Amino acid sequence: MFNAGRITDIDARKPLSPAAVAAIEAALDRDAVIVMPGQDITDSEQLAFSRNFGPLEDGANSGARDSELRLPLVFADVSNLDRRGKIAARDNRKRLAALANRLWHTDASFRVIPAKYSILSGRVVVSKGGDTEFADMRAAYEALDRRTKEEIEDLVCEHSLIYSRGQLGFTEFLPNERVAMKPVHQRLVRTHSVTGRKSLFLASHIGGILGWPRPEAMAFIRDLIEHATQREFVHVHKWTQYDLVIWDNRTTMHRVRRFDDLNQVRDMRRTTVRGDTPTAEQEAA
Ligand SMILES: [Fe+2]
Image 1 (cartoon, protein in one colour):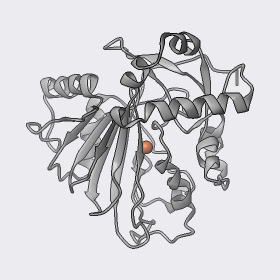
Image 2: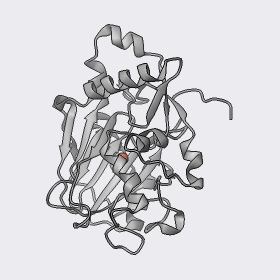
Image 3: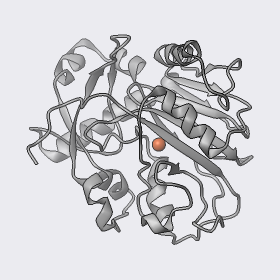
């Protein structure tokens, strides 16, 4: 069983003591996903809270030009709202790109330095559907047989937004997304810098394994994702308004489940803490 941790004695809206920051980091090292209920937080409070854990990176609001965004660039707007705050139309390009969030993924694995923590605030939640599911990539790794562990130890995957969006047939990328689309290299097995535990670094952003024929690579990645998302490795988070959920992208995958997004408002705002280092060497630019 994979269960998220719960922190109820820290107010994320107020400045944190070093001890509180350390307690949250230790909880994430142990539990990988943390729920902090009852955090009715503003955007500026969320930014201040998030910066306790390191520099932030901009949200990849793919499909939308900057001028079409509802929130400052530093947020990933994971709502179903358009720039005016109205429910996005069925053919809204940002909506169509964001449907790839229903595929298992880790945030920003398509960046050379992939994300560390994601911090997601549930400002308006829906009563039916819209759960966020998390899979524990440490337990999934540990459950592999020895031969598979040896086989994958040094494999390097190519990650790009093009691959995850492409799985759903979305191809309308904008010029400013080209930087985020160039495939980057990530190790398939990574070791947590604090705990030393190994985990699978999987995402639907993967489009190949270096040195492998593409169909063979993709068939294998599918197998691994299927293995890693068996129920025993998965925690389902059902949202209550003002939940603040934090996860370590280095040790988990996640996905959002379907909900009635053309009729019900779901306003979720994500901040993303940058990771420290690349997991693999990159091709020369
Ligand atoms: Fe995500």
